[in-house]
Length: 61
Image (cartoon, rainbow, N blue to C red; front, side, top):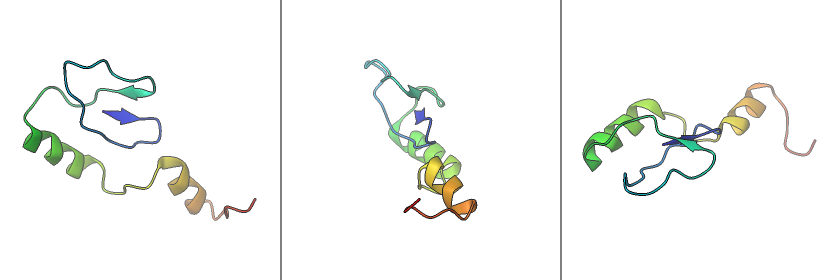
């Protein structure tokens, strides 16, 4: 699963997807899911933080 901040998570298929998250990789074993996350989430900082730092903005504004 992925949220709007582009953070990834493993989630059991029997559980409802929480609000704000979406499924991006189908049902698979844990190793395959972790492989997917490793390949698709190279920078674990939240999207908003990456964008703020890229724009050169500080946190005190």
